[in-house]
Length: 408
Image 1: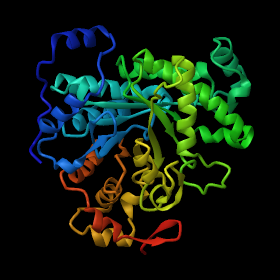
Image 2 (image 1 turned 90 degrees about the vertical axis):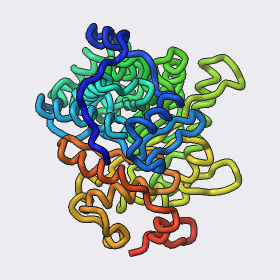
Image 3 (image 1 turned 120 degrees about the vertical axis):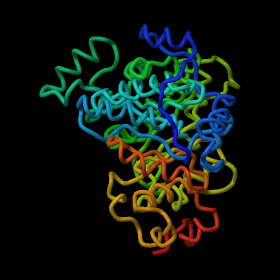
Image 4 (image 1 turned 135 degrees about the horizontal axis):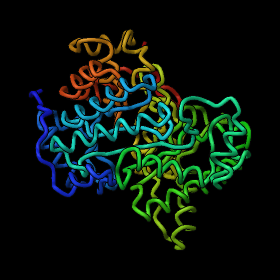
C-alpha cells in the first residue's frame, strides 16, 4: 500500500469553524461521498475491500475499527484517537463505538480521531459511524448502590424505571433516546449513520420473549423518531447470542420478526400504514470459532426458505457487521489449522483471522477492537489484499442438513 501521509490539509472553512467551536459536525455517509472515498483514500486497496450497504448504496470497508477494549485512561484515549485517524486516511471508513464503552471515553476518543481525519482531508460524508446503546453508562465503574444511582440518574430524569433494568442493561424509550444523544455529542456529529440497541436478549430470561418484543417496539419507535429528526440514519440491534442460537432457544431472535416490529414502530411514528422503517443493520459475533451466523440455518425469511442469519439478512436487505473478529485476541495467537493452511501468505494468525472473517459471503464489515496502534498494522496489511474468493472460502466448509459445517 502506498504510504498515506497523515499531515493536516485544509478542511472546508465551515467544518473547521464548527470543530473549533465544539459545534456538532453536520452530514452523514452518502453514496457519492463513500464512492469518492474508495477512489481517494482507498485508491491503493482492491475494489473488493469495499462492501455495498444495500438500499443506501454506500461503499463501506470490509474491515472496521471497534473501540471496546482497553483501560479507561488518557493514554488509551489518545491511542484510539490516533488509530481512528490513521484508519480513516488509510481506506478504513467504518468506526464502531457505544455510549458505555470505557465509561463513555471510547466515543469521545473516536470523535477526536474523526476530527483529526477531517483535518487530513477526509469528509464527513465518506465515513460511516456506528454507536450502540442499552447498557448503563457509568462515569468510572458500577456504583456500590445501583438502586440509588438509578434513582438519581435515570428515574428522577424520567428516563426509565427499575422494572426496565436487567443487570446493568436498561431498555426504556427515555434511556435509548438519551444514549443516542450522548453518542452524537461524544462523537461530535449531528447525525449517526447507525444506532444499534445492544444485546436486548439479556432481558428475555426475566421478561419473556413477548414482553421483550413489546419493549423493543417502543425502543424502535424512539429510533424511528431519531431518523425523522436526522439524529440517526438507520438502526438495528447488536446481539451476542440472539442470532447464533437454534430457533427453539429462549434467546433466539428472528430477523424477520424484528423487521415486523420496526414496521409497526414506523407506522406509529409516521402515522402512515405504508411507512418505511429504518431497521437496516445488525451486528453479531463471527469468527473461526463462532461460525453460527453463517453455518446455522435458523432464520425464516418470509420468502419460502430458511437461511443462516447472514444469508437471510442479504435477502431482507439488512447490512451485517461482525463483532469479535479476533475472539478477544485468542485468534491472534492461534487460528484454526484449516484457515492457516488456506492462507499461508499472510504474516501471522491475526491477519489470517481477519482475512477469514471479512471474506465471508454476505458479511459486510468485520469489526476489530484495536486499542494499540501497532495492531492496526495487521488490519491494514489485510486490507491491501483481496478477500478470499467465494469458492476458496466455501472449501473450508461442507454442507450438512440444515447447516454448514466447518472442515477440520
